[in-house]
Amino acid sequence: MEKPQEARNVAVLIFDNVEPLDFAGPFEVFITGSNRGQDFRVFTVAEHERPVKALGNLSINPAYSIDACPEIDILIVPGGWGTRKEMLNERLTDWIRKTADEVEVLLSVCSGALILAKAGLLEGLKLTTNRLAIDELKAVMPPSAELLEDARYVDNGKIVFSAGVSAGIDAALYVVGRLLGEERAVKAAEIMEYDWKRV
Image (tube, rainbow, N blue to C red):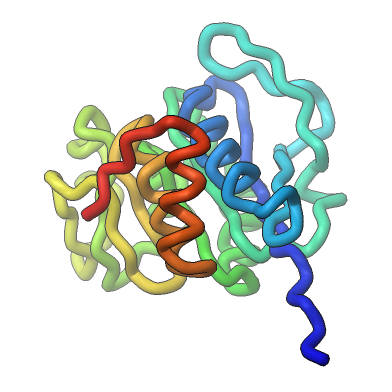
């Protein structure tokens, strides 16, 4: 008898001034698409154990610090104004670079691409980001990367990029479909009553 696959650990990075929908949208997708927790175990992770203040002063308690985090299968790096500070946070970019080597999928949402750029993860990749962050990403991306300004999300294999805010939901549904079959992603979108914009 075939042993059922263990649930994949999905870590959603949070930091001060993160855009709420950038992390909460994909979080919702993975819990909704998890078959009641059988396929994905979703949790938040932050640099420190203290509460994180998202945009709008939304206070979130991370489940783990980066030092105490379980093994990660899928890492989600969201955007928001806080990325401009965190992209210069070498402790965080070093952790993301190391974690990127170990994960099955790394999903960048919105201006999370700025953090990935500073982590040195964009070489030779096709990218997208929030329309409002395009010039900032152009300034830090390597010459070998290609920025697709009109793409809602882009799949490079291990690393998937999404455009701004709600596009992270579309990209997360895409990842669920890639890993577990499109039917699972369609079902998750139906449960969420979300109009999935597939590309």
